Length: 183
Ligand code: S3P
Image (cartoon, rainbow, N blue to C red):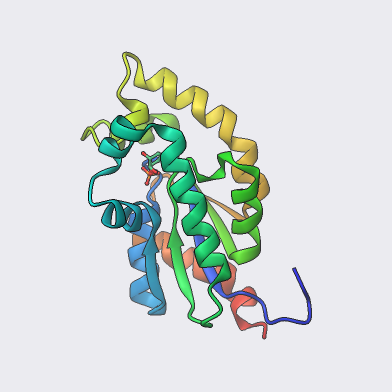
């Protein structure tokens, strides 16, 4: 980060599928008023089809390329607009993405246990990576692989268990206060 330039003031949410990023993003938006960018939603809108179909028709790498392109776009945006950016759970898989995210603002890692993730994600069939024989085993394996990436990308880890979106938003803002009050 170039110290001559003002700190980027984005608030970025990362974490596994079902960890509450979209919900917390909306709560933060209500409190901060910053523009809310839900990366999955932007990609779906631009592609005109749900993520499940993007995976089905073009494969995961195509989706990952869209994710990286959107991140670069947000990173390069010089408008000074402050944003809350809610990411997809797999965005940390690429080293380039991890670097971009870390430099774009205050990165908060929302962590939820496997059982909670399973309970939330099994309510619908929106997550192509979990449409397998044994989704719990898939969640465990993916979580283990991604854990170090969430760790190195984030400035703050938040354990979400037992807290609702509003409580999480208040806690995050409290922790981020120094970051946001610094010029
Ligand atoms: C993915 C998570 C999803 C979505 C896509 C891939 C992942 O986003 O980007 O299905 O690899 O973990 P959410 O974390 O919002 O479910």
